[in-house]
Structure formats: structure tokens, C-alpha cells
Figure 1 (spheres, rainbow over the protein chains, first blue to last red):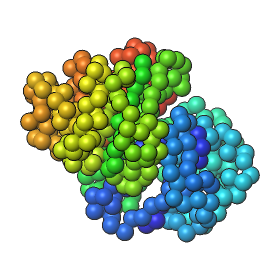
Figure 2: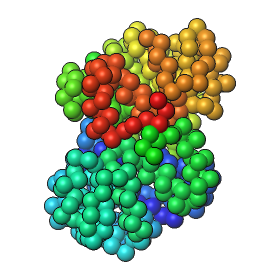
Figure 3: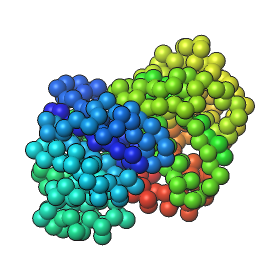
Length: 188
Length: 188
């Protein structure tokens, strides 16, 4: 399992780190030793929407070889959904069997055409904006359509991460990771 | 209000970002326009415990001038609690009126002597280790002792962040931030 975390300027750091933490515990807690991941972007570093800089090891490389891409949200998505260069790069993930978003990252999956005819969700403030991209907008914590998974805003990243752990490594693994994170969702 | 986020190698990114997100929303959502914060460390960048690199703008500068320091946890704390150079730097925060930790960051507050005679908490796996540093170890989500606040493991960072928002800007502000994060704790 090889996962690409897709980053960009004005990402919301918690959208990304909230799913990165539980997913990467699959390796650090020896629950899925074959898991690999990369931080990917068009630039060698990105600044979150509050000016924190994160280094990006995989710069402008095609995304086709991953088993899953995870696209967080943030104010940056509002422009990137109309940015031809960014979308051309993101579309290199077309053959990736599992496309995942957190928060307004769904707008980017939508702009690539990957939500057509599907149910999807996003941050509560962007539900209307998402409508033009997908079959049906749902106000749910996580919408798992098999090849596409979308999650609600910001803190839903943690629930999404645990959902992925469960899907990839089973219920017992998800319970172990949640215990290590001392997490119990108030949204179940 | 000027806040220092204290970073170091092998920090757990979610310990930090989980509190950084709600606290920094005080400014991004115009709830406390005077809020300032810095990312501080002894090095110009830090690597989290899963090899993500974060740039650090404030390198090896004294911490005395802040109103609050926030110290996340992670595997790095296990050695740093015995590292004279790191502790000498952290102790420059001695005059700071509010010292805050997430997860095993409590071991670092403890190693500075700031938990003596106080109640405190930490990650569930480090409760025993914390005992030698403090008056009483509590298994609670957040322990607020006025000048020192400690939080439980990893995901408790989000609850701590909202606790700080409430303490600094009131209940209505905390409710707004939680709504924007789409967060409802399962630990209340």
C-alpha cells in the first residue's frame, strides 16, 4: 500500500495531519509494515493557511503509481479548483484506485471529474459549492463510495484516518490506533 | 497574547497541529486579533516522529517574552527530558505565566520542575513516568492548574486547543471555533 498525501499552499494543516497521524501509525505500530507514503506537491515546500512551512520530498512527480491519494482541504482549494496547472498534475492520479479527500479537498476531486454521479461530502460551508461536481451531496462525517472517499471538515480528518485504518487493516487495528491516539469521536 | 509552540525532533505532529489549529483560528476567524504565535526550536527545522519536516522560524531564541508556551509530545521527549542543552533552552520560559503541554510534552514541563506539587496528566502510556515530576497524576483529558495546563495523549490536543480558546476568548468563541472545525469531542 503506497499512499500520496497531496499538499499545496494554503492547505489546512489539521485536514492533512489529522488523517496522516492514524494512517502512518499503521507502520509505526507495526500493523501494516508494507505501508509507504509520500508528501507530494508542485513545490518543494508548502505553507499552510496560517503560514507554517512543511517540506515536500516529492515535487511535481506523477501520481499514477500510488494505491491511494489523500487530498486535504483549506482556503487554497478555492483557487486551485480552477488552476489548470495544478489540476493537470492532480489528474496524473486518474489510474489510482482510491481517491480520498478531507474537507474542501473534495472540490479538487470534483474539479478532476472524479465525483461525477457519486455521493460526496465536504466542509459544511462548502456543501453548496460541491453540488455542481457530484451526484448527491451528503451531510455526513464520511462518505465511502468504494473508489472515492470524502470526509467532512477539518476534525473529520481523524475519523477518516481511522476509517482507512479499519478498511486496510481491520477493526482490531483501528481500535488499537484509536486507543494510542486516545481518540473517541463525538460524531458516531 | 503571544504564544510559543515549542518543537523538537521526533515530535508527534498531531500533538502540535491539534492545538495549533483551534488556537490560531482565534486570529484567522477574527476572534482575538491581537494573538501572535511563533514556532520555536533549537534547530531551523524539525522532523516529526514519522519523518515529516517542518520549518522553524524562531531558532534557539529565549522564550521568556511569551505569554504562553505550548509543548507537544512525541518519542523525542523521552530523551529530551534528560538533555541538558534542550532543558536549559526550555527553562528560558521560566517567567512565562502559562505553561502548557500535550501528551508526553508533560515530561518536559516536569523535567523543568514546573509540575512540582501540582496535578498533571499525559499520554496514558506515560502516566507512571510522569509521577516523579508532579504532585498527583490524574487520568483526565485536561488538567488546568491555572499557570500550568497539561493534556492527555495526541487527540486531546484538539480539546486542549478549544479549552484555551474558551479561556482566552470565552465560551461563544470556543463554540464558533469548534463549529468551524466540525468538532464534537467524544470525551466530554
